Length: 196
Image 1 (cartoon, one colour):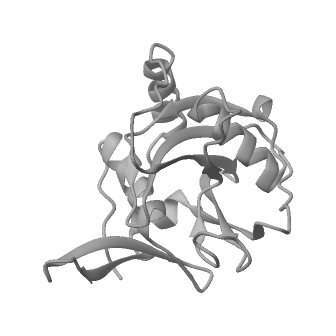
Image 2 (tube, one colour; image 1 turned 60 degrees about the horizontal axis):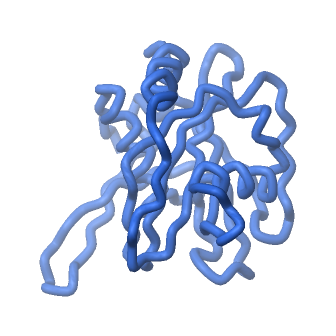
């Protein structure tokens, strides 16, 4: 298995020298955390299932995070605030912070993904309003590619294009969530194999 802790630590060293700019954008700004949790000699990505009652992306599998608010100092503040609201994790329990490139969605959001490592034995508690379940995917399982699928779409000009998706616990993580996960692996120089 890859030494993920090493990659996350390396990315966080690069991040220490970066400022987090809020881009000029016509899109709604948001940020998410690609959170890793170490358990039983493996790492797991934390994913959430959104309530059907939320305004955007109801019922979908997502990364912890949400929309930028005017009271947020920057997009990292947004990500920390949302993680605490959604799963009860305060920012002092997330270490090795780094960032990935912005992700634009088909629904008009520009998302800034952050990468973080949860401290050992952090209890995750869903808010029950926006979030109804917590799922996780093992890095070992992800690397094997058995959870990876390809979804096909038509764009407005009727051109066919593909996007990644992951199957876990009978749910499908797709769209920006799947793209961010794939982009993380690309950034550390690792391609997820597709068996499924």
